Length: 357
Image 1: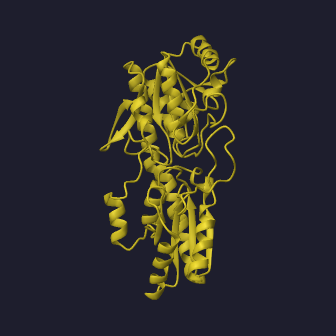
Image 2: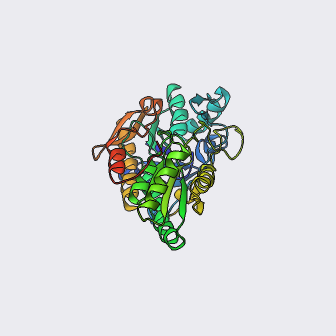
Image 3: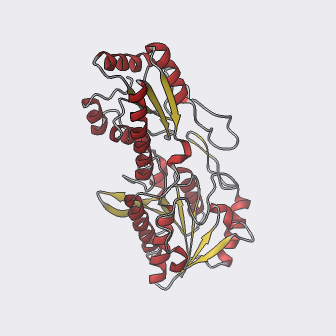
């Protein structure tokens, strides 16, 4: 048996842990592993790949990024906007299939998020031996209760808030932190709670600047000299508009700037000196947390197990501390968003956090 592995979409802490798990589990069965570079693009003739052995993955658990490289552009992009899916051209699929056949790949493990797994499902429908592994720092795949990379991203947000807290107190300022989260606000929610934010603004909960300002004024009246605000990049302003960096250039529009908008309006409405910091890709980089390393390895091992059973068209999933699998189709049909009435949101409200609603 010879299996292939590739990762595509945004980079994510824990990708190397998955590769380590796959290569080790495959080797224990006497199988060969081929890693394709830069996602699906590595499948196009003449093929861009490398043979991987356990020795090649020694020491990569602690490394951020991916030793195989990744891309969220190119011939296999499946997501072109919110809810919009582009089919990969048949000519591209046929060319890539030749590489798969020539290398005698018995199973192709695709490590990716919503867009990458949408492409993977299209290839499975055409008879490819596909197995999916969920990867996204946003933690927004409905079919799994957690994805690797999320814990690392939250840890980065908490570290940022801890640092902003001291400078906010020193200058008696409001500090706004913009974090990732296009459609789902899990990073902002978990990071905000753990980092003791006073206001958390999410894509799922509409807010008004007046509500945010009133909460901050109330805090000042109670004797608090500074406040922390966390806002997800996908949070819409009161008019329902997203803050974008540029136009759609063949993929989903790049978000960014809502933090500056929020900071500007807070300063206007409260008279309080306000500063904004945007974490951006810092949330994607650096060493993964122990949780993400363990989860990544477990996901990789389960993917190999599914390959050994010929259980294709499935995605590795995590529920109730157990790693299992679900159909890829089920995984990409619906995003897992923050329910405004969920217990986590209620807990945040109970300790004085405002969501601006």
